[in-house]
Each structure stands twice: as C-alpha cells, then as structure tokens.
Image 1 (cartoon, helix red, strand yellow):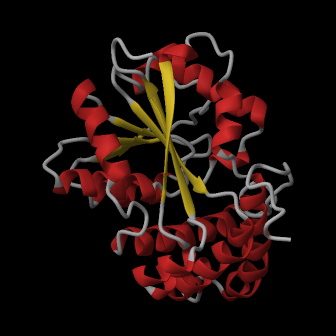
Image 2 (cartoon, one colour):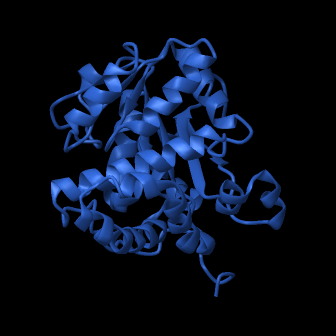
Length: 282
C-alpha cells in the first residue's frame, strides 16, 4: 500500500483546526503546538541538514539586498527561526509577519523578543495579492505548513502574484509520502506534550483526535514538486523563474537521531524555492 501511494496532492478535504471549524482558542492551541514542533526540529538542525535551504535564502537576500515576508503566518514561529539562523551568519535580514487572520498577540510576543528583527502587519493580508507596501524590491515571501490549505487555483494565483512582483517564494510543507501519513503525527506527539498539557483540559483531550485527523489530511493535501511545476506552467513571466527543492531529515531520524537516516525513511518536510533565474540563465 505504501509503495502505491502517489507522493503528491490527492485530496482537498478539510482540516478541523485550521479551516474555520474550530474556535479561535482551539486554533491558537494548534499554533502553539506547531511552534513547539518547529522549535524542536530547528534546534537539532533536522529541518535543513545540509544547510542548503539557509544557503539559498541567504544568497537570494544578499543578491537582492532583500527582506522576508511571511504569508499565512499563524503564530509566526517558523519565519523567526530562519531569521535567527540568518542572524547567526551575520545577516541583518528582517521579517514581516502577515495573515488573513492576524494573530497579533503571538506576533507581539515574537517581535518583543527579536531585537527589532520581527515586525508584523496588524491588518488582514491576502496571500494571493500582497500589497505593494509590504513587499519592497527583493522580497522573499515564505509560507510554512500552510500552502496545502490553498486550492490549486489559489496556489496558482499566489504564484502569479509572486511573478508579477518579481519576488521569490519559499514553501515549507509536509513532504507528501505514505510514511508521513503516520509519522507527521508521531513527531507531533513527541514534541508537543508539555505545551498541550499547559492548555485548557478540553483542549488536551480533544487535540490528539483533532490533530491526528488534521495531520493525516495535511499530508494528503500537500503539493509535490511535480504539482508545483504544473501549477506554474504557462503563467505569464514564469519562464524567468525556476523551482529548487530540498528536504529535511526523516521523521525517524528526528526521533531517533541522524543514524536512523540509514533506514531509508522519507523526509518529513519539503522545501520548495520559486525564484527568478540569474541574468542570462535559461
């Protein structure tokens, strides 16, 4: 059965916690849980084991003298972790957090801890039509564990907006594989416990059920490299762009250590960078 899985987006089914079915308080709990998972994965370098994604981000920002803009930011944690890594390299890059439903309290907390490197737009921002004042020349847009919530038609609109602006886009999402239908939830359970039990009791009781459902659906809805390339095909101006794809370590190695990579497990995360070609490149 695992070998027969197509390793690409296979459905558009809904998720309870993030598609408008849950209360704001429950959705906030999910965002805090994802913060814990992002922090755990980044802390051991499993998100970018070869440093290729950070190299690509740093190279783009250096060449364009650019900045970061997080779309559909949720709690905003993933983008701030990239800024922390860039800062360790001596970069002065900053990030602006945006969302159609801004989580201002969470963003104020991150901003106050960032030394001026994190700011946010308090008003709703449509990821398919980013206002000009939020994207100065050389902006690298980012979207973490959220692109799969967008239908193919909306993803195509988002990509068209990127091309029109001359910006770039980094997508961090679940790698669509049969293994991750199970392992995404296993990693979540292993990294989210303390946060979960700090929340209201009914959240602690409901979220394992809601999270398991939503984790499976997230993988079923995630876009593969082939999906993304097909969605880009024919967009006006897209012949001046190219995709690059990178991967995290597997869920097994996140849980058991790097040696577990030898077991041949699938990567947990897929990083997809859509950026302008260098001048003269075909």
